[in-house]
Image (cartoon, rainbow, N blue to C red; front, side, top):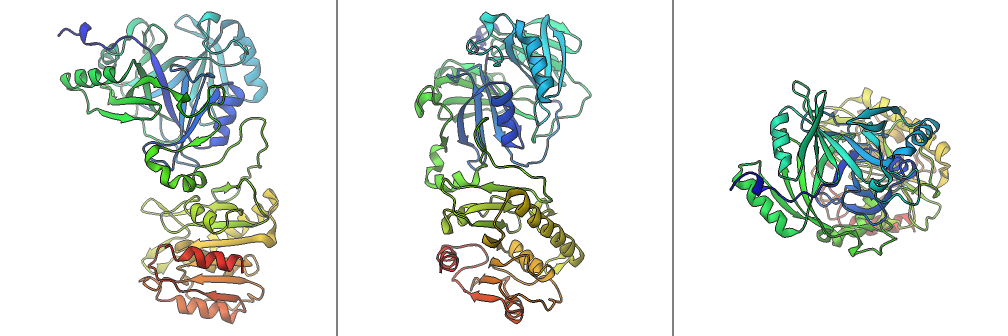
Length: 516
């Protein structure tokens, strides 16, 4: 079979998927500034604890879609070879000046106007530093924009960085793209509707996944049969391994092009209106079908955000990464959550929601790391702790609490601190080093980490200590409990039939203590 007859039909871009570290800033830019519509919000299909947002035109038309995986407060990546480095959106040609004025007025980083492949272009950077180009085209080419001159339209192009430009360009031809022009190190490939710019980045650093980078670019396929045909074709060509997926709103095939960029082939159907009415897309959080049994937990784990114009809480720059979850009908209480080793700021939110459904939850992330996972303080070896680090982190945490109370208007008398394992150990140390800061605490599987526990006045401090009867790490809990009693704390000791981790037995104990 010759090369030409082995191609998929020309169909253009379906979507591009990128990664953000701050969901609220992302929504404000893509909906508030660019004017795209939020057309779907889901838990990730690979990892349902990861929020996935889809932006596009009102109908979520393939070719208009820009999607984001939310790695809230996640580590930044590095843009390099084997990645999409830029995306471009259509705007009416006559609106370029108005967009420049808008960007300058709103403090959006912008360069231009300039010309690229004969088209007027503004180069912007989104809050994660991703390059977003606004390309002026004829009004007839700006899909989905008739109601507002300053609303970005469909995808015009993406740029792929590659150290194998000839092979990358040849690979893209099977998706209906053909070379039409070159400028500098870039070769423009066009379909019937849009373009891919293949940029020769030979000698440049390889890309590293993370926030501020692209995950993949997707091209359109007519239907499932087209995916099967593409998979068979790629297999005959000895391409990189392929994987097929059902993404509920479309079916897809993944493959890597010769330069390393991840390519998806995605069907147009069944579309985004299968579980929401047209005109009301993006209003409801959906979870993948395989995760429906934990949908309520996922609603707490996934970060919250507000659409532009809707009420929102302030965000303060405090010493620790933190996240709020506010229920629909909050009461006056706030529970501050400190995870165990390897957890994060959202780790304990489902448990806390079950024991206090109407409480506002404030999850905090420890700043120490061990083998790449978060902790609250360093240790030299198992059971041997860096007490200088404990004291420094306790000082920073005390400042965090004061900043949160002031900055977020929290009721100090309605704060309860909940810690598990390493987080509970740290809370106990904070109580020893900063008595009076914490007046209500739930300590799950706690042990003392200070060699000498100071004599302090804990009168008026209410503490629940929940120990696991089968917890092999709970050998010194008696010393901690004795110290709490000696300080005058109102101590409730509640052993449960469990090991070191949380169990079904912990919830009823915590609920009864919170609401005696």
